[in-house]
Length: 256
Ligand SMILES: [Zn+2]
Image (cartoon, rainbow, N blue to C red; front, top):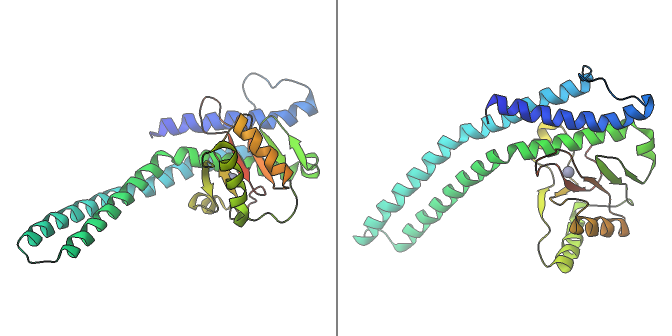
């Protein structure tokens, strides 16, 4: 993505954050904010800067790998071609060709995964940012911290009973596949490289790509509450994209 694309993205997210932060601000002042947005609090400028940098760095680091992986694919292809000839001449066993073919498949997969990660980087980083902002809001807001079930414009949070562990994920997966006859759409399972970068603890959590107000999302939240499983459901994080809405199962990812 170009740097101007990044900027547009970042401002979209800031807009969303401003809207969610405004909910509490409006309650205090009962006034609409003036037309030009007030200078954002330091925290927001930090988030914006972090988002731009994280997106650039993450895509940059992946982008550097692509030529190497492309080269690996080329080399593996040559090796397969060569071993086909050698096999035809009876100079190598068939197992040798098969081994080289497996190596080629692995090299192609690595390249495809990297390309996928690059195209999904914005989504992943936006998801992490939205969770970080919600976590900060909960930490600062006593009303949110005290209630076991709370719904704001941006998210619904349920604190659940103690004892949730990601090793119980199968229970959620089984409920979902039994009910909807398809796999639970897990977008993130446990800690990822992006969480490390943001110093967010996501070890004991997973993100489900479902809108919390859709039929499947609603059924899932109901199941989680019935079973005392904590969650944070995001409904409209980034308007106009499919990015924002998701259900985070587990406690809010705190910073470490
Ligand atoms: Zn999450």
